[in-house]
Structure formats: structure tokens, C-alpha cells
Image (cartoon, rainbow over all chains, first blue to last red; front, side, top):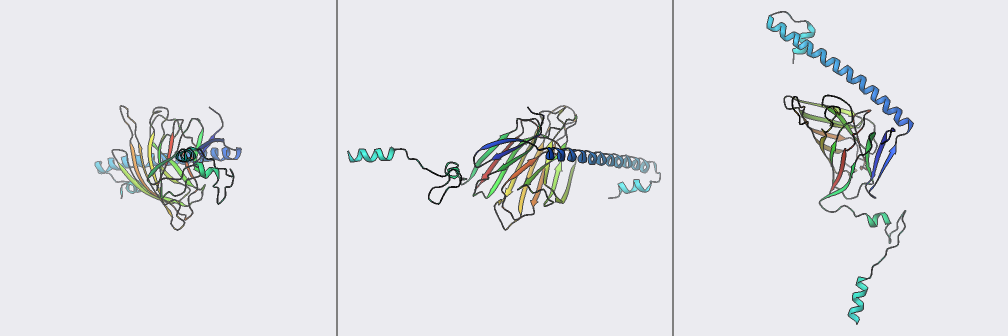
Length: 78
Length: 215
């Protein structure tokens, strides 16, 4: 068990497996990648939630015979 | 007597002296002498099971010569905590290439809906892995990756990936099965294969990566 991120390298020519700690630069990049991905994930999930809400609203309005907004129409048009 | 001596000569062990670092024309290097080359057919090359909790990547190098195809059989999990099991992108790179030289298109299903998409100019080949470690700590993803003509210097590299992410439990159990046709836009011979989890994440302890060669 270690607190330092590690990478595993398998040399197929010798069968040796090395577990090497990441350098400070690699760790910094890892953290930056994680932060960037998390921000992208949050944005993507928010956009998907908004889209689902618009679809639900559009469907309800169609059933009720009410006019749709442009945004609601956009999510229904294939 | 003559026959006995001949038999003795046949049974005597022989020794081969060789340079451990470079080898020579008449005396092959020790490395090449004692590591068998890839045999005809389907051969196991190396298998590694991760024991470290903060494993960021696994790289296979020193690949054996003569392989017409490589196959990876992976049973792995992304160590991300979470209460819902979903599919997250795991990644693969060749020769440490982190440039946008990869592409893929995929078809996936979760048992109730299907989706497909494509992506070009990526920094890695992507496929699904399993997360949701908090609630589904035992749900690993099974993946088979076929790499075609890895040593060709005239062809870009084609890769086919099959992944199955399953969770056996009551209630909603997301199941993601996917097929990916991928490519590395390079005619370089493959010298290393790196498997990475989701960006910024870790492979979970117990994840296994097995490399096979087909000649």
C-alpha cells in the first residue's frame, strides 16, 4: 500500500514487472487531468439534465395541446 | 565401450557463454537465448494483477518478435468511488503516443437502450471500464482487445475492442456491453502498449491485464 500514485511496467522480454512512483510533474498532470475531467463531467451532466427536462416539458405540452418553446421543439426534432 | 562414451557425450550438459548486454552473431545475447520466441499459434506473453491502490497505468514493453496479432484480455475496474455503476472511459496508447492520432467508433447497449458514436483525432483509444466502487466494489469490466499486425511499418494499426460491464444485484443493475472499432494513425511498429483508467483516476487493486501473441 502506498500514498504515491504508481505506474506498472511489464518487460515482456524478461518477465520483470516494475512498480514505479510517478514523478512530481506526472502527479501534477494527473491532478490537472482529474480536475479538467470533473469539470467536463459536471457540465455534461447538467446539459443532459437540462435536455431531459426540456423533453419532459415538451411532451407534456404536446399532450395538452399547448405551444412549445423553440428550445423544447429543438430537443424533439430528430 | 564406444557406444557408452557416445552416450555419455550426448548426456553431458552444455553451457553457452554469451554477453549479457549485447550478444553477438555467433553467440546470441543471454536475453534472447533464455526467453523463448513467440511460438506458432496463440501464446501467453505476460499477465499482471495490480496490488497497489494508486495504480495509474500499466505498460507492456519488450514485446516478443514475430507476432501477427496481439490480444489483451483485461478484467479491470476504475477505482472511482460512487454509488451507481456506470461505464467510464478507459484508455490505451501505443509507444507512449499522447498526440491526437487515435480514432474510434462504437456501438454500446445497456440492456434497454443503444447508442453509437464516433470520435477522431483523440489522444488515446477509449473503451468502457466499470466504476461505482462504493456500491459495486466487485463489479469489474471484462475487455478483449485485438491489435492487428502490430509490427507492420506500412499499415496504420487497427484495433477491435469488446467490453462488458456487468453488475449482478437486485434493483437497477446497469449493464454496458460495447464493441469498438478503433485505430492508431501510425505506420510505426508497436513497441509498447499502455492501459490507463479514466483520466485522473486509478485502476483498482485486483485489476488484471493479460497479453497474448498470435503468430
